[in-house]
Image 1: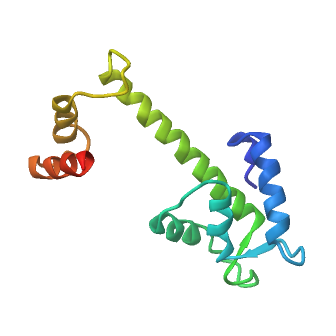
Image 2: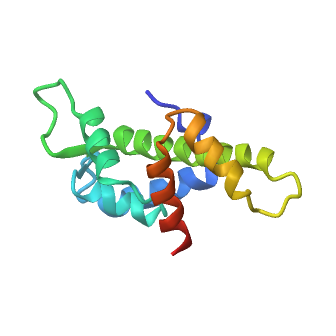
Length: 138
């Protein structure tokens, strides 16, 4: 079983438990699959459609006795932990950009950003970079 305390603060666990009680109609230990997104949004997470599909796939049970189209409490907490981990990843990502902001202005020079986008990680083409830069300035 997932120990949520390893991933999130007690304060968030308490909020999740209150939210769970509200959506677990009849105290069955399950919520409707459709309520998962609503609950995550109430926690200020904004999962993409792709993330929602991945979460639902991850939560499918091999147990034929498990209710279909239902999410267990453990499954819900796993989704919360996943979103918390993703939030940390975003913060780490933003911290990486501080390397390219030596004056701590919150800005990166365009030429530096272009270099990063065209030469590091999953590199973009010059045209793709130009299009992103145009979108960012509009």
